[in-house]
Image 1: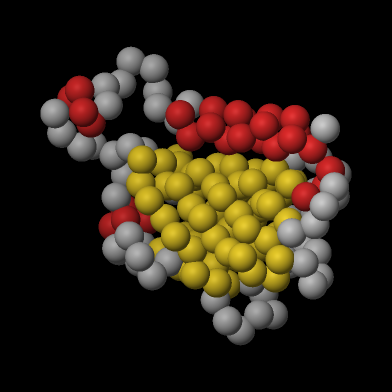
Image 2: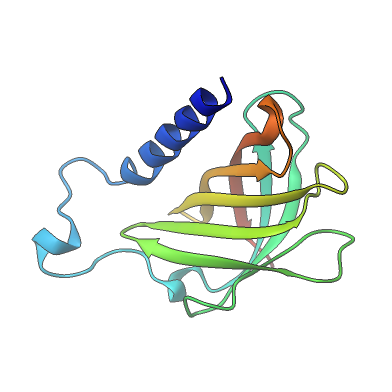
Amino acid sequence: MLNLKRSTCVVLFSGLIFGCAKSGEQSADTAGASSGLAAADIAGKWNMRAVPFSGDTTPTTFVLTATGENDGWTLTFPGRPEPVPTRIRFDADSIVTETGPYESVRRKGVQVRTKGVMRLEGDTLVGTTIARYTTQGADSVLMLRTSGVRAP
């Protein structure tokens, strides 16, 4: 049963990554030039919210600090002095993030790893994040809607 849920999450996450391109657009390979999102487009601080799709829908808030480079990005959670490093890569018009392991904000004392995909829509970053907790059982995976705006 757990493998079925993991497989479902992998399929959903893959769909999010590969489903981000608009129909009719050419990829950078077929267009001959890259016209996607770049680190410089996102550079700065972003006030973010991650809200589970179901269950306890209390938002998790954090500040995403995006450098003008593909490294040095961090997440800073309220009440936690140390920022958490996050790895990023760009895939056309999407930012793919991987963070952790770090202590979960939602589950005290539990380690978590997150993977997410975000796009810039107007002045807002929007996307989906999958949190994987180091626990056994059906609640080891949580899917969240993520959104944020530039900090003033």
